[in-house]
Image 1 (cartoon, rainbow, N blue to C red):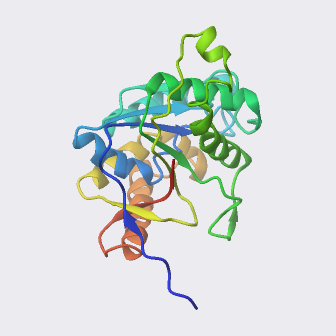
Image 2 (cartoon, rainbow, N blue to C red):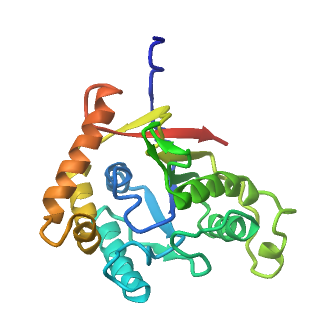
Length: 249
């Protein structure tokens, strides 16, 4: 078998990032450990959620579920130093549609936040070839990759500048895809691990919905996060790491 490609360290010469994912908790399954390290270092990270995850808990009606999951997302984000958390209102959990409407909303957010780094979740068909990825993850991840270019082109969605005063932003330098089965870069994590565990555990209602009411959210979060980061480290330098597939712009 050919040798696995060597992973490179994530870039550090940036100040602003925008993380865009489909659901509350998408960032907490690994990426939040790197985000905690970045905010501690003084970098600014904001979150944009395409939905409120309203279809994510079988025992809760969508309206109630959306309120719970928004609250848990804001709490989890604050634990890793993220205090700007926004939600889109025109897209629905489980049935996010690919197309210009989504790209327009994401391009508008990129123009408003003016990030150098975009972060999103695995847009590929599978998780490592063994588990099918959800439609929402695939659609949103690809839309983020497209919107990075849309945000800088004044002739795509010209109404953003004309009606909303959002000038084109060509400053996105990279799009980093967390959870990709094809990682190219790694961010070593240390103190951010405990904060990432706390951040995932903040989604307690959702975690209990996954494993039943007796599942302990903190034990679940620690087991998942530590295993994920340990696996990342084994592919990098032997120390815990969050892996990303990095697309330069």
